[in-house]
Image (cartoon, rainbow, N blue to C red; front, side, top):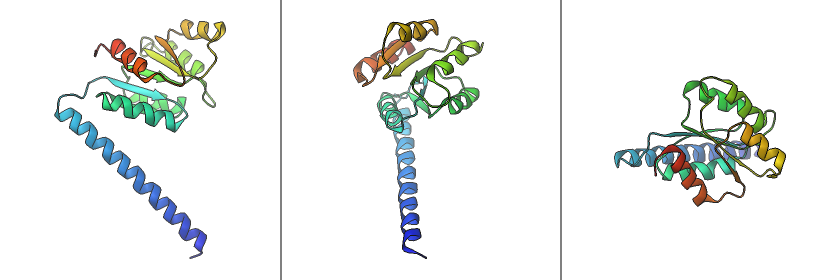
Amino acid sequence: MPVLAQLSWKIIEIFRFALYDASREKYYLRKKLTDRGIMKQSRILVIDDSTTNIVLLEAILTEKGYQIETALNAKEAFMRIEKQIPNLILLDLLMPKVSGFDFLEQLRKNELTRKTPVIVISAINADDENTRKINDLEAVDFIRKPIDIQYLVTRVEEILGTR
């Protein structure tokens, strides 16, 4: 086997192990929180095309006891919502193909998801037009990136009534 192919297989093996290890760690953290009675019943869907942002938000909110689902795009998010409607959605606006604005508009048109609270988390300019759009689509809050973690956690707790 050529050296490059061997190296590629080694890299794949390393990533596979890292993903397995991360999912196993996530399982044990959830189990520990559930066993202690800390795991909250609220489900939060985090939608962001940046895996870095997803991992950060998932780590913070899982530690607080929330059940987290993630999606890298609108199509993935709608598949997760079809299975079970979350109690809260954290939504990035700047995503490829279907923007966060378009996703939120579709969400509001659906009778089943119209009242699902959404916190917009984005690096977009908070000018009058964007703020108006966010308000018109009935997002419960707009948090600019970089995220103020304490503010985000406080808002999540207030919205879900877990404070």
